[in-house]
Length: 154
Image (cartoon, rainbow, N blue to C red; front, side):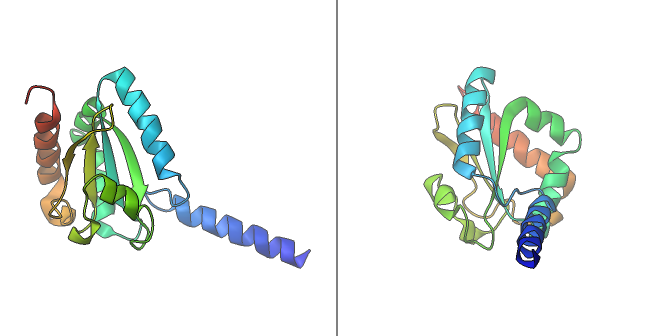
């Protein structure tokens, strides 16, 4: 009985930690990206893959800004969003690499994908790694430029 309680407590604690921040530490990132790609094909939008971690202050700032208007409206109009947890740079690193995102340049980092799974844009030089210094306006401008650069014909 005591062992069962310990196992349940450990599972509950792990689940609570996963829910503490913007990144689901238990998510299947590849499956989430595939779902978003499918949704993006229907909606005729791009997929915004945000790589980060719950311990990262800049990742939390980026997430908060993405949830506030006017940035939230821009992001919702232009992208299907997938947040990918990179842990302590020991999770989903292969996915970031596949999309041309060098995590060693800092997180948060992003890749923008077409519904056909083509990389349209990726942060390669830690462009969002100082989200705290960028502030809401700087982050919004970054997404405006990124969205404009990934539209067909631009």
